[in-house]
Image (cartoon, rainbow, N blue to C red; front, top):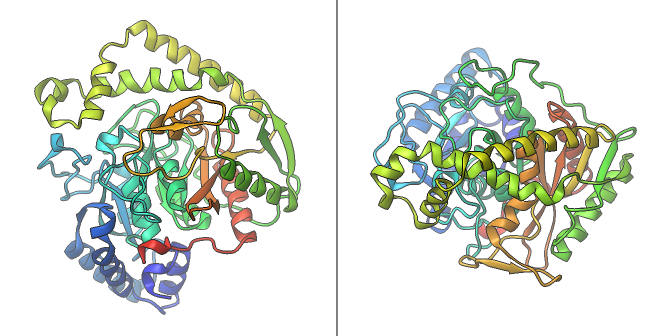
Length: 463
């Protein structure tokens, strides 16, 4: 197996055993980027020279003192919303052309302290305001969308151009591209991973989380990045998950939605996800039917919060340089200016009610299992999807629909691959739990992953 094909867990084990050096691993990943980037467009910026310098430094440190931890010497990518000192943070937008970060974001600082090697900055849908990432092609089928907004991060991991990556998730922006590209994506509990130095889309919905090859990899990255940061008003003081028990699932109750999550879902997606839920039962979990509360209000609340918050963030630059925004993003930002204070406050009140209702629902189960997105990767340029019930939905609305509840309520949500459709495109299952029960979704995800074959493999069409 070539070094770039290794998962984070495998690479860390090889580095610790002195079977693989950080320089060899980084050189392999950079060679992979050079080989596939022209077809994929995952990166805004590739920092090859600084990555190699960091790898040399990590190799020396490990030789002298041993690894600081599992991320020491491991190549990674940051979504181009996350500041890294000395590198551009453009948010994949002409509005930010020439902007160079003067300081590390808190997440980048923690990863640097853990010894991770930054390969570069990965593309996002402009300012994270979209579910497509048009600059980037799907790793499994280059004629299909990567998903967004962390599309570059997902594709880099799926193609071997990074051992792991960090993204942001406001309405599914880690989980959607992870599902569409066959990798693992974690949206931690709101407030668990700090956002200082991360360009905001919607302050009350934004999360930072990892994209990895395996669930165990996600556990390792979460342990390195979670923890209180007083500079982030949403950051929550409290214990950081650092133990993620494995084993079977005996005694765990897995909620299976009887409404909402399986409505307007492609048959192949439903079949794969229900099959994966059945596998959880085989591993000892008890399946419990649950009713998703306030289901008909979910999308209205998501958009009612996100649109005005995004417009408020961009107010000055939208007035000064409106023509520098992509047309789809500019339309959404201008629409946000029409949202009244009353509408925004009603969305906030509805969110409070939804959080309380979800807390009551989750009191009866340990995790909730459902599809991550209702369909696999759409063809590039496709704007709508027609469902069997005769309804038509935009592709973006379809992708955000099943992810938005976890952003509104702030609960942890993990997506992992559970199958493929007839075209060979990946299908993802989403696991959710009560706030700060991130370890529960990771435990269930790892149990499933370890019970099946083929987990953590690269996208074959990126070979």
